[in-house]
Image (cartoon, rainbow, N blue to C red; front, side):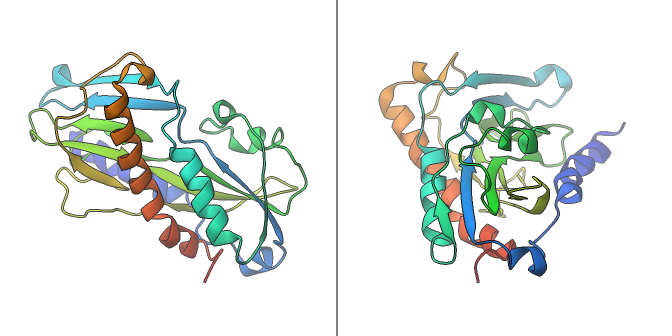
Length: 235
């Protein structure tokens, strides 16, 4: 399949899967809300070359938290708490993998809330290449550009708390439309301060890890108000 067609399909998949804002009749029944953020399961280092032989990808476990999920939950609690009774919930981040979110909600404590707001990794095509990026990571354009980009791609999904039906979904917005190659979601240019690859997140020097966590938190949190408004959860 031609490269540009694959890239277009990658960009269209998230939009095709989205349900949009929560319908008014379902929104009116929401009083109690639980918030789940599961972005910090893994971090991806990716290089996109001019040919397939120049492509490289390595996923490493985030074995030492960067604070992204905590910041997301804190921000969402602050925003949604003005309208709903937000209850703290406990859950396993590792259980929230693509295609298994509804099933993972069965093990969230407490059960029986009116709705669960779940933040999970999203995906995007990388410019006009046939490569994609997802979740938290760094992508190096290789032959396309000498610039590196940090991304925190996420979707905010709203599930009915009793039927586990997906009733609303929205993606984190593009932060910088001037990025080249473009990424459909929160991303920013970065310097060479961060390593190209490591074996695990705890192997990154403490200062770099602190900087990385700060940048990722900014990317994720800044777009949350617009995303939550798109879902009609707040005015």
